Amino acid sequence: MKKVKLVLIIDDDNRNIFALRLALKSRGYQSLSCNSAKEGIALLDTNRDIEIVLMDMMMPDMDGYEAIQVIKSSQIYGDIPVIAVTAQAMQGDREKCIEAGAREYVPKPINLDRLISIIEQNS
Image 1 (cartoon, helix red, strand yellow):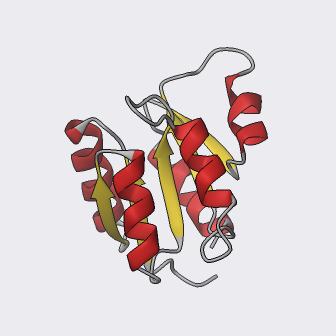
Image 2 (cartoon, one colour; image 1 turned 120 degrees about the vertical axis):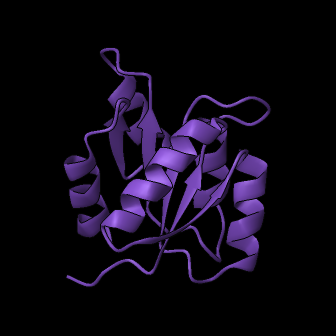
Image 3 (tube, one colour; image 1 turned 135 degrees about the horizontal axis):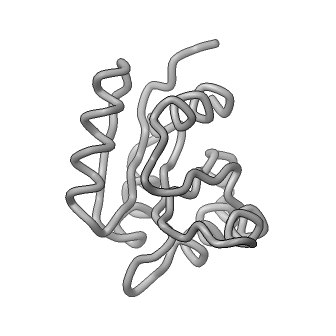
């Protein structure tokens, strides 16, 4: 399986971004990050090297559910896999993320081995 060139992390918490970027780097992945869905969509508009998106689902302004809809409706980058990474871990939350268009769901706190496995399966 080929290694993903570039992972986009969209999360409004800088601590989560820092931890994810560090963890991905330790596994040989490159990443970009931003603090809002709107900024993430702008990055997708300008960077064709992004191969997968890790999306926080609970953000102000535009939440992950709305952002996934925007991403999936794009003819340019609508096929890029979006992985929901969220603290929402109640019964039904996984299904809600998948119904919104996420390819997969990873609850916080993140099991890094599971996340890496999902990234590799979706690249």
